[in-house]
Length: 445
Image (spheres, rainbow, N blue to C red):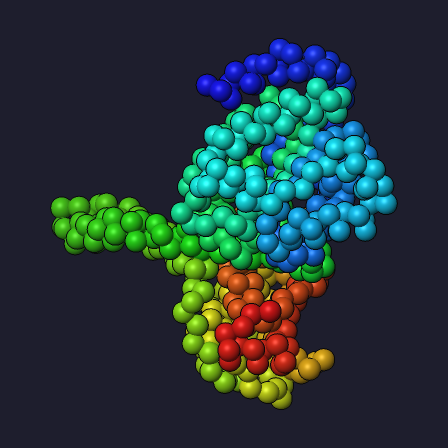
């Protein structure tokens, strides 16, 4: 009730100070790829390093201070209040002026989130509402805040998500911009889902370059899809197995002879559904790796009869050109899956009479696996999305085969790239020898 009363007071009184709200509601964020947003925006940023955090927050606060906003930074590891103040002073020449007139405050999480001993979401939310009211009374356009959550223990998480949900529901009524920061490696898959659901915008800030940031985002999507699939696959497969068994029994009944074709079609569709589930589950195989030294060429030669049978059935052919390469630390089961997925994608991309070539060779201290087809090429519109879940160029595709390949490459510290044109597409899987050795210790780059 206390929060609602304060909100009503802001809406009736405090917003008189913001009578220009509609004209001035778009605010620059200072975040390069977010641009302008409205008051009442609730943002989440996942970060990896201390530098990532500073790269987001320093321009964020600089922009707020320069646009007559009251700013509050609630810190926790890896940045202390003293370090935050020093970083702002180095980044913003006029910081001392803003601080001296009370436009910028920096607090420790213990003085804000844990001010009352244990975390109390309603008390913290009331404090935010009170801050908005006082900022408007002092003539500021609104307030800009951030709170880092590295202090958040598992016992507080559910309560904190309830608080984030209330913030999300209420923030639209306030002249407030809130940026919540979460350390990516402290969040499990279920935590990520809850966090994203309780914010209007979410992004990942990575100290790495743009391409690697995109790869990180894609890898998180892959893990999310795989783990969700693993959690429900058992419940789906059990009834499917029962249905398939009954259909096969009905197929044997003489008085249902006229329906056998329909039963066969239903069984085939159940098998197809089971194959799709298997592709989802392949994404969840993160902690089941069994690395050993082996030659790619050995695995390709073992798979060749199977791939050749696929090709002949489609009136196509496969040629091998296996060069002199070194042994790699690999999970043979995963690598077989990667080779089969790439080869089947290539076969499906070609018309009858086409030829698929599989090559291995050394280049730039890497073992390279090249799979080249003679199809019509990949549309440029999907270049940047290839490898993401559910992105497919095939009418009957699930969009998971190539996703599985990217996932396997990631866990072998390998890189996948491709080139495509009217004459076909070539996929390259590059196993850098130095990076591949880290697989011995289970380290992924």
